[in-house]
Length: 86
Image 1 (cartoon, one colour):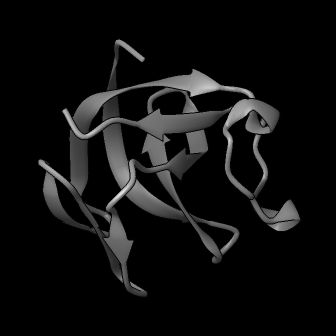
Image 2 (cartoon, helix red, strand yellow):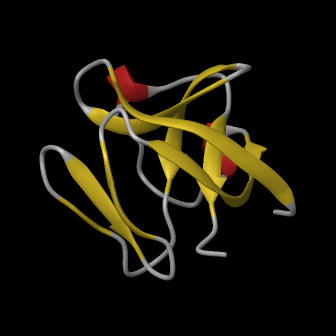
């Protein structure tokens, strides 16, 4: 989880938060303590990010089955972005 994650907060299939990065649109898995509403996420040590806003943080790409969290079937992508708070 040492990659730099850069992109804009987006919705994947209008249901799950994701990140629109240079490499494509990926479902995002956020660290514990992250809260969300319909328009934004608040990530510990990062702050509140609204849909369409740029996000630059650490993390990495992982297969969905190794994310360790439930991802709804209509939100799947080939890989997910695991976001760290630093």
